[in-house]
Image (cartoon, rainbow, N blue to C red):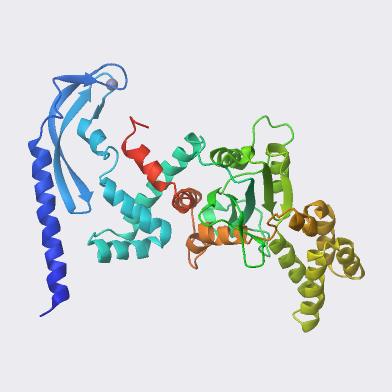
Length: 422
Ligand SMILES: [Zn+2]
């Protein structure tokens, strides 16, 4: 007996049976015919023009649905009241199908997503359909994110909130890179930078009493967008607006202590200075140590000496001996550009690298949250080999991923499927 063949066939038949039942029930109900005319969005009256059929992809398979159609002569458009009601107005995918496309599209490649849908749910859908479905959902989420900036939840705030800013490059298609300067030998670019904003708390302590990120406290918002604002601009950059929205949702500015953790990029501190002037600024210690190791390699090559030198500098960093680091870099300034850059980096950010002081204040300075956040929210899905993103495609999948990882998908979904209540 081939049990697998039996259960698979039984599932297929059960789904088909359920699909027919739903089809019959919906098609027997003609209450969506609500009289000879209905109000059109243009303000005129749209006239009833009979029932029309549409094929909807549901998680039970195809459904052939008959719906009342209203046509407006004034603006030459028409609508189906039932489609609005069922949430299938501009799509031929049912809500549960859209949700599944979003789930797989946010987690794995569209090709793998198509395979998973087939194998796990018995839904036949090719990779480009998964791509379109997941990206359309991501677009909806991105618009919803811009609209809903009110505080989430009313729980008491932890005394200290952390806001991290970072950037990470993802591979792009040539047409979305045209004319952009990059790090390739010919000056062209292969990637564009996703800018990410994360908010979390760190009241928990590890076995040594050091602050640790609180489980489930981190939320993300990210996009490929500009953080640059010319001095004369009246408007904030798109990314600055994003940071403000995330801060508002997390009530960041109501915290007794606001901490901004980031690497040393100037745009980060411009935004911080501008939007969150009262925040304690910390350069993520993890980033500084990475820089020290990279610099050591630039000076000594990949040698034991490089490792030894970097380890000594990292200890000085932990001990707050920044001038010792600057001193150790000085002899290499003449013949190593990286040494010069590193010295400048330490010097410019010295007030953001007072780690012993931050430690005394019980602040988390080397969380790894940012690093992990970039990996989790962006890298694992968008930096896989062979991937080349369009700007719009990347931003929709990033929006979808951030929403799900921040535990906000169900709230969004409720608003989407009940627009009147929202
Ligand atoms: Zn009209």
